[in-house]
Image 1 (cartoon, rainbow, N blue to C red):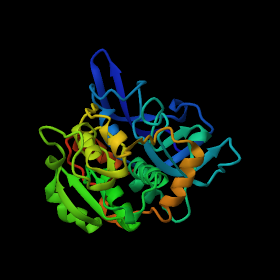
Image 2: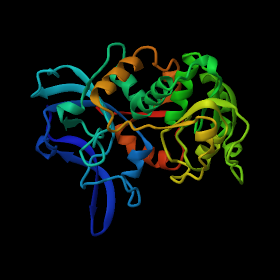
Image 3: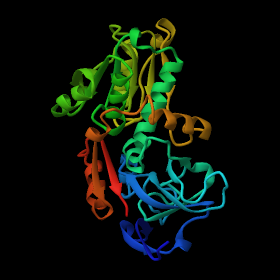
Length: 330
């Protein structure tokens, strides 16, 4: 263990919010049973929001952002997570009110730490990260509600983003016919290479007026967008279909009617990855190393060094990141 160590920290005082690199000591880290030498993290939109005054995600300053991290345990007070083991952690309060992954060390409660599944490297785990875990939860919930490949096509909105492109990749790998909506039609070839059978612009899901019930089209949908896009997807579900709602990049409001629910038996499934119970979390990470592993993971992932993190956070806030962006910490 080295002291001092490098960290990217967000601070707030009477002059406002500012972010930059600091040298910290282990005593600056919060309490927890597991001390991790962080090797990889990732850049998520939530991490970008943590660095700006209007982000409204940080609950405690100063804070080391980074809601995803993976590395090696260098000290453990929990027999179930021995020193020297490789681990990952996502969600809970990491990078929100508890120091996260943008530092060479992180100390976490044992109950937040997942052993790295066999078959995944630490870098792979961060390429999947919160985005891939969210997509996996959505697919699992849709399957629990009866979705099968023979039921019909599955819509993925916001498909060029982290959750969207991984959802396209996973669903196509499982044998589903995937239709992708995106605000970046320049990425259509990229999405088809991941397995999307049809790619269309997001404007097709944002008509001036959303019908209470529209032509039945999709057996299910994974929606990171929300707002009018979610309402439109609900109106075009096939009978008994489900929408997994995973985000709000298009707005937090939802103007719909009861008709999709009472006349077509539609299901609206809320997906949360931050506080997913640990038993389910570990089980899904095992699937992410197995049948849910995105086959094109290398194609959807770019890499930056920790020193390049400020520019990367600006990029994701500006909508300039396609797929996943991992951060090499050490």
